[in-house]
Length: 117
Length: 112
Image (cartoon, each protein chain N blue to C red):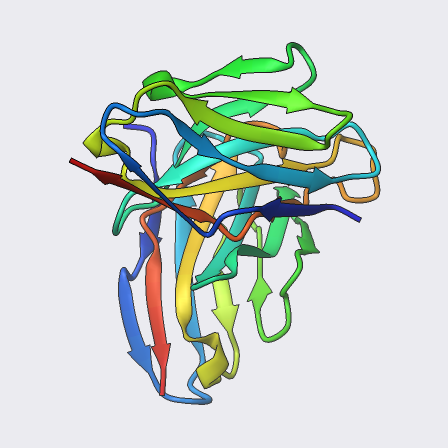
């Protein structure tokens, strides 16, 4: 069965320092993996997506994530945090078409990123 | 403008009074789904639809119904709401289940 674990519920960094948000997944297949961001009182917005083309995926706003099959991880990083990055971040797994889980999306519990001046 | 529109944004109701939350998308997307968001639990999928007249249960379907009579609309129905359905609800759509989701702005439901 699919599952997603975001290892930190809350991460605090100083502006200008690197960001690391950790995500581990479990899937019986080669899944698609996503990171979404949610700013306060807003819906979710896609940051980036992995679908087996390249293990290092670049997203919007300077974020990137690396798919590591051996570690079943898909951690989100950014070299230098900006105040506008403060938000909640969700890691999501989806199994491929044809699997028994087709159509199901599993969200992690979310990580709140705080950016201090 | 491409968008997913949910209505209402806020709803307060009483236990047992049937309600419907509407969701409409103007992008001709085949895939639509409903989620509830609760503190510490992230988003949990309630129901999803791969296409017109094709719906399936997500992880928390109990107490909810959906229908997909036309491509653009995917209403969420609570036949007999209960307080444990108090939550923030999101509708989303995409070209396919492995394509990026476009989210509505959410419906905050309170059941007393």
